[in-house]
Image 1 (cartoon, one colour):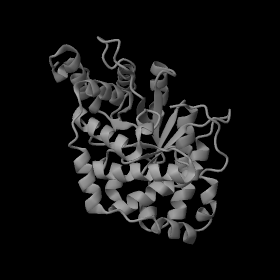
Image 2: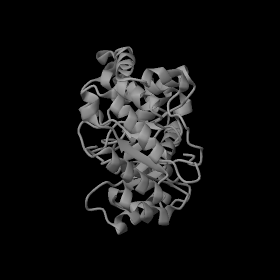
Image 3: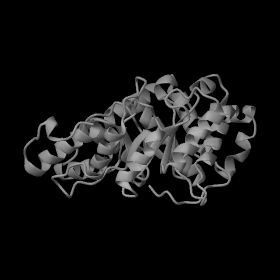
Length: 327
């Protein structure tokens, strides 16, 4: 993902500026969005998940999925050594095969950004979670300090969490203003900015209508990506939820001309699952999103299965799971 673009001084498309001037106008807009047909969304997602692809297309899809992975470790027991090893794997996922692509990013807690950056340099993006991840329960000052520290340490991308309590209570303007403020905290001294991914924790949003509202809210506030989950709450990413978010970014681009990325995270563990998501991206949003600049997988275990399937296609035989390093 490019990381040197100048920061937008007024986040959110100008055409919708009046929508975000008050709590009442924002509520009217978000609740005026078309409702999601739950049965229809789940049926369409299930149908897209049954599509089969040819072997040549599968090889291309697996390499694309590898390039879309945000290789992630977000545990209290993370150490400098662990994240350095993960960073090395991000650069060379399969050391025995130089044709294997690197992943999109390594995602860690903000205090470990420097450890990852020392290994990957500018070859792979470094993403940091911020804003009191995963709960989002902190004052705005703390959240913004969290973000600024990660950016100062060299983070190329910031994965923030919204205040789900505020959103579910209908305090949409508060959520909007926090996203705007976090985006401003992503600005570097040279005027460029770390890209901002906004995490909804869709497992706590309760309805697909809320997922659609959160998607539009984040995009209006200036998100570069919208992301399903922290990976700490179940259910995390699902095909129907991702379908709703893909429809939102598609509709947002049609309305504003601005393209926003999507990142499902949590629970995507197999190459088969990843390919289902790629089929959905192509069918729902379009092939413009079939690039790591606009679609990512937040995952810790997915990469190993992608590597196993890639080796099978290349050599005709499976390598055991212990052939690749454990994340």
